Structure formats: structure tokens, C-alpha cells
Length: 127
Image 1 (cartoon, rainbow, N blue to C red):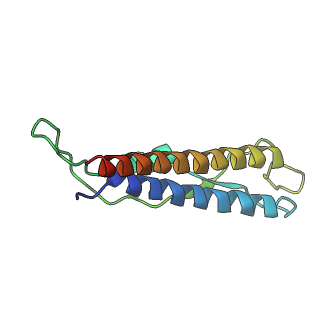
Image 2 (image 1 turned 30 degrees about the vertical axis):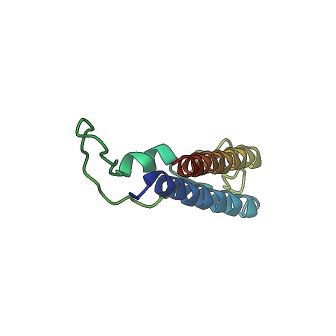
Image 3 (image 1 turned 90 degrees about the vertical axis):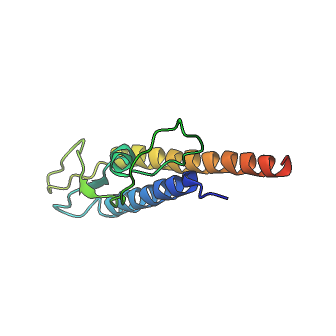
């Protein structure tokens, strides 16, 4: 059986979401630290643009694309909604919104992998 790249993509997405979740947690933990600069992880779409997975060619009519190594997620300074008098740029409201987005990313990732797993099992049972 050929390698299935959807699981590799899902793994990269889960890794990205884990890094983002840890970054958000660090921001929240430092919400009262003077001069702390909030950080964020670049969007997964940007990571995905830098990741070139080679699709399987099951037909001569399929396009052939080259493969390259993916870059890891990069942490950058976040755009903050507010800056406190102490110079801290952590907005708890903004961090909670980002945490909810990250939770949704984990849920979507799990749902896609679960659906694909069911499809693979169904095709094996019917073969």
C-alpha cells in the first residue's frame, strides 16, 4: 500500500496547533509581567504554503509535482489589541479568542483524520 500523505498533513497541523497553544498559554501566564511582549505563531496557511507534499500519481493524467522539506512553525510578535502602562502587550480577551481558534483547529484536525480513517476501513472491508 502506498504512503498516505493526509496523515502527514494532519500531523503537521497538530504540531502547529500544539505550538500555538503553548504560545498562547505562555502569553496568558505572563499577562502581568511588565514589558512582556505577546507572541503568536504564523498562520498554518503560511506553513502549508511552505510545505510541498508530493501527491501520489495513480494515473498518467495526474500532474507531477516536486517535494521539499517543510519548515517548522515560527513564533513572531503578536499584534496586540492594547498595551498596558507597564508595556505589557498581552490582551486576555485576544488570547482567549486565539485559544478558541486553536481548539477549533484541533477539533477539525481530529474530525478529518477520523473521517479518513473510517473511509480507509470501509474500503478495506469492501475489498
